[in-house]
Image (cartoon, rainbow, N blue to C red; front, side):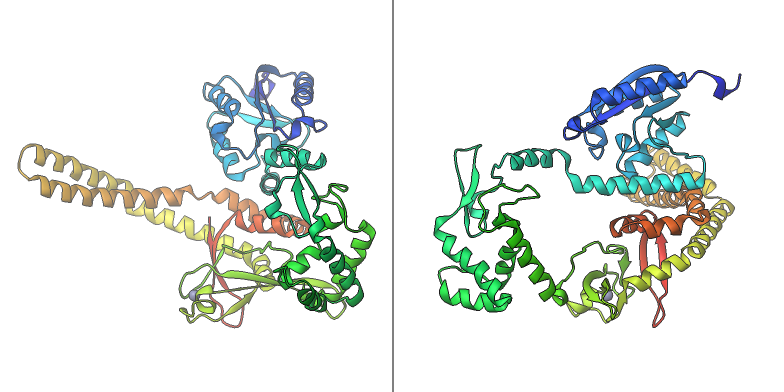
Length: 469
Ligand SMILES: [Zn+2]
């Protein structure tokens, strides 16, 4: 009987965060029912069910007690396969995923989703998995599960989650502790009404600012806070997407009209709305080594389309004036360059790694390590026999240990590079197609998944040295 014919012994893994318990399909019971049914259909024998309740998939591994128990069972070779509902039940973090995947592979255990299909035996499948994990990680980074859940409930019931001190002008917090609400502040009513009226009349923030500063010298506001106020939905009673959260100064319709005016008036001033710069943290200055900083501006093309123009430059030059590198590099050109060149670069990289591996094998690192280890043993003997003193012993031992660490580190490091993963990326014909469908945040994650550092070495033309993870 071959391996596939054997009845598989599986473990069911379930994770549900506090927030999700109430969501359809997510609850512990619905996951369990679904997975039991799935195991039955597939003819699996269920060894055990592991449940992490109230845990987010981005929780530290050590906080996911059930997962740790499950890994014990894996190590004890009690199961062949793990099943879970969807990949995001298992991990939302690429690094932890691979950490655990290593353990599974060492013990010939694989996994399966009941409601999503993955095929990790093909390169396409693995690339898809990587992208999927990256996306899940990004989503979960933005969520902050539990805290957000509590806040959401409070907001829905109209409770204040800030104090009067943090309330915008025009409002205050009132009520017993644990039941505080935001209400209009009668002291500010005249000012707030005047603000919206004046803006509607003048359609100019600057002019409104000028009039109000003269009329209400007791308010120490600046131009920017004025803009903040006029765009704050709280003034029509809405907070974080919950309407009728508090008393309103104006109707939603009137507030929306005002926003339209601001939008058309300030098209040119719209700056940095999207903070997802694709290569932040990846680019370094070729002269001083500092990470390049990014800034973005929304611009309008001749045909009226808006686009984001992002530039990277050395902060040590532009801010501190301590580096001669005054180059400004454009994000769209870096991206274009990478999309044109990444396959070639990755191939070259594979070639280099293989070359180094061969060198190591040739120079026979292992015998070098052995020689130093012999010297260390001999040194111990000399010291014990009283032939050398403590000072000489400490000095030599430190030196040998240093050599040893260097040899071992170099060796481990280079053999750790996963060339197959890189080959997968090269061979994937759909990679670019998938790439163009990603949003900026996920494009950023894609590059981050294998690039460690990019150094601009071009002059007029774009050219980079690429360092992989
Ligand atoms: Zn520099």
